[in-house]
Image (tube, rainbow, N blue to C red; front, side, top):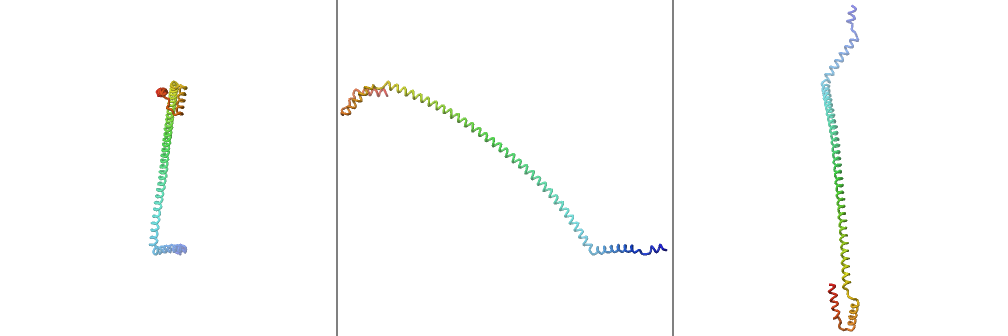
Length: 191
């Protein structure tokens, strides 16, 4: 009988625990009745916002990755273009330097050629002038020799001039009859 009493005697702790559990269930049911629809709606909206936020984060990461790739591509293209332009400028500079050097060589050759032609012309002119000088001297010698051969006797010329002077003094007609032959002869020999 004592077992029955123990068994049938209410256990206050167990009863209290059972009553607390029942109370918790009741509270939960009441909460579910009052707030349940709103809570589920908020939970769904919160889950939806979390999914959208996750999707937007993935999209932002994808866009960031694309931007990094495009930036790397643009930097590479810019570097390649800069290298190409630098190479092109160096080639143009090299070609222009070669052209300037070729022009300088050609100009130097032309100047040298002109100097040679000028020196040759000067030599030719010098030769012509010396030849002309020699010819002129030779002609002068010939003329001097001819004049020496042709010249009139001084005494005769003196007498002739004296007679001419006296006739001019006295207004007498000139006594040139005999002397005209000498002057004609002299003019003929000079001519």
